Image 1 (cartoon, each protein chain N blue to C red):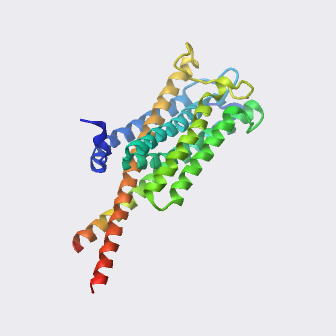
Image 2 (cartoon, rainbow over the protein chains, first blue to last red):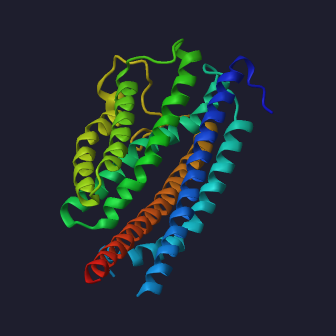
Image 3 (tube, rainbow over the protein chains, first blue to last red):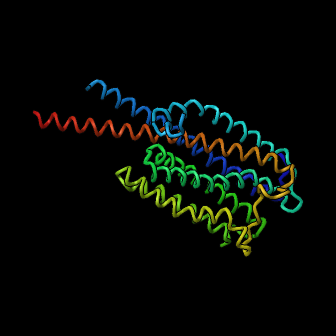
Length: 51
Length: 250
């Protein structure tokens, strides 16, 4: 761990906030994408069965 | 082969799924290398101390916040002129990513500003135009959610995007023509002979590369999701229509 001196709180909080936001948007994006894909597959299967 | 072939959702999804693994991997490598390099292996600045390490997050996110809006502008213009649904959906998909980029730029800027300027916030031209850009992003997403008909939503959000472009341009160039603010000039510029010192500049470029690749990966993935959502809604509407016809026939 580098010596961040008196600005340690500022630097660490900037990294923490940014990493949380970046990971958050990636997780939300993938979660929503999978949900929508599963929903579409289910509707396509149902539509195919009903002609 | 014409670029417009990718306005076909099936072709777009096929190409998008081929390139996405490379984009995700490239983003992970560049961000991992750039941030570790910047955080652990670069020295403190003689004036700003260790806060200079915030540059590896602040500059790339600010750059992408503005460029995401320009990407939305291009996609919106394609929608207005050529009515390709994929372009409208790509603009819609980019907005939440732009919000996150703008939020990171605003928050890291405030955290950096407090020890350097003695304040979290100042009504400086660049900060203010960035805040307005953030509000435009929120308004853009809210407008998409508020309108049920997707084509009408695409029309109105495209107009909003054109108007908001003024603030995206202001965010980019405010430091050049408004000199009364606290914010320094651009850290990176193509026409400047010397940018920040090389010891900071190279890891910064790696981080910028990571943010660009992450943005592209997220937008392609989210555009695919929007295309699938649109198809699902169309199938459900068709089911409902045929169920209605059966009920009338009975």
